[in-house]
Length: 414
Ligand code: AMP
Ligand code: MG
Image 1 (cartoon, rainbow, N blue to C red):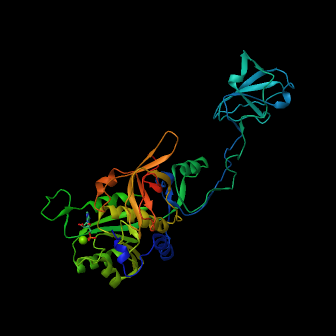
Image 2 (cartoon, rainbow, N blue to C red):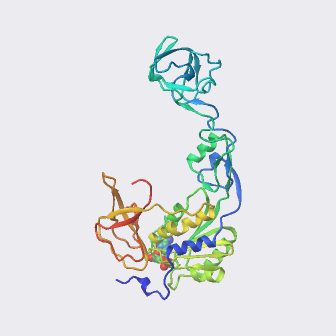
Image 3 (cartoon, rainbow, N blue to C red):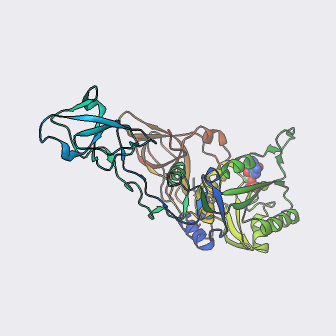
């Protein structure tokens, strides 16, 4: 079968070119707010943070054991030190270590200035207040030096960065409890279509339940987004136009699904053309060819297709990278790697395809992928059962069982 796009008057825009156009067309939001660490997970750091302290702040022990000065050791022979006290984590040894003395020390406890070595407790023999060290005792070990992790004044985290749990830990380790982050993106989303029925309502003949809005709401869940669901708008040009124009005044981004194609009731492209500007409205991917991107005033507009699988694919491949750029995070490529395809896959040349697959790994670490079954852009059930995209480049003419293919996992767990 000839792919529909080979009948297109103009060659379709390749996905990389579409992403380049997005990179050129959009700029990150400029507002900044200060947040406490508890609210900062997943937000985009707007100002680089420098450490006000050394981390570690004190020389401290990396082991539970005994601390001493190596100059007091007997060269190549066993030796014995007198126990002078204890340094606990949070309660340093108060005295000063005299020649021939050692102290009991615990992980994280301050090492006295005179000491330069900590020996694990398992490697000594304790006899009352005398601690015996063997001839093979190694000096100058198990001490964490001041500033070994981060030096005072050094850059702790450079902006821009979407803050992770580890970043919050690092900021907390430096005693920082507030950070400057980019403001949230204001996003409005709509579904369009006369056939759409709200959940909880009986399904009349010819109608369908609105699955796209449920998915879009979930796909948009991100700490960087402030999202408003505008519900369903019927296939009515004036109503759609008014909704788009109103939303464009108050939101950074509008996302719609449905009506982006060339049917009689598909008004999205027309409205975008009339009220704003279209950057592109068709791309060479499958599913997801009818995807409109443009602007109404300063507001970015993404008109996604109506078919549910195409909604997810276009959201993940086009809208999500755009939202990252708008949020202030640099562009990043999705994780892809090679796997052996265990089934044959049908494909016509022309568009880059995102077929859905089930990913597995054998006992040698080799990855295998199997088609998730029916690949229609309305078949959500096979997508729900799949774990990755099988990304087939535009020129690919099909895959035989045993061929190597590129896969893009949906999550980091398989
Ligand atoms: P359209 O782009 O409006 O021509 O829609 C393409 C296909 O997607 C049609 O079968 C629609 O019924 C279906 N569709 C459109 N919007 C939704 C939605 N919100 N939820 C589920 N299916 C939809
Ligand atoms: Mg429609």
